[in-house]
Length: 293
Image 1 (cartoon, rainbow, N blue to C red):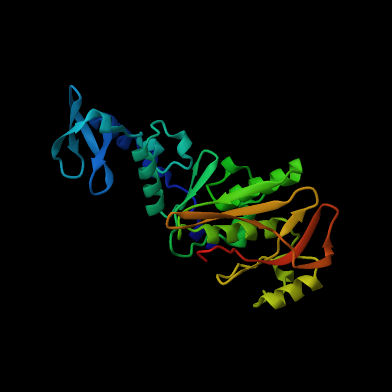
Image 2: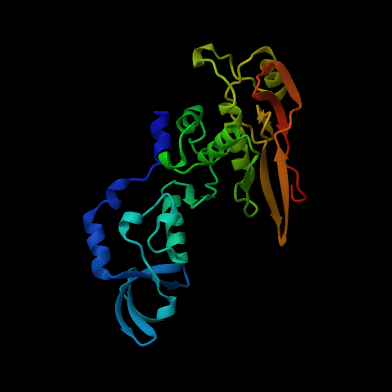
């Protein structure tokens, strides 16, 4: 049941995308994007081209208007609707990018790839896509095998660190309120999970409710358990490689001023039971500090 609830926030409904009627309608109407004072861009049907201008019919109300041909942007076929990686768009322009992000966001899909980047739109609510089951889904998978997610980006960095024995960085940037801090929490949460060994659920003790209890629990066991990170701080179980260290970068912006901060996975508490020849696992509290926070 929990998995089904999460699927609608991860996977695209392919029924409309593969609809041949939608494809035929797009081709027949010669749909394009034209500027709009209300929504930035709106769909229109190209009717006639006269010199440097074109006559288009707005899809919303059927009104015919003249626009400059340079202001017209091509529209992608319906098969590219809600595409997971915008680098795959046939017509890569501002209108198509904004439309794709908007359509995915309205469908509950907050993560979208743009080439090597992952674009995230803050949903301003909790989504069921950060559970232990979701972490297991992404663990060890290649990026193209799974829907866009911050876990996929994190797993790529973690596997590269382990395989290449080189430092890796994840850059979280955006305006104030964009979700940098929350996604940084998810990055560290994922790293804590995949770098540790686990008991089966029936063998796991109850989740400690305070940071102090979590540290004591970790000190008594060689297993690290999945702890959802609280909103009032980053209490976590980080992992650092002996030959590669992972850092998380955050950019805080206030008005016209921005400051970048590197957040290393520093250890403030360590149990010798958790040491292996390749990994040093510990419990830590990481605070993201900036002039605006």
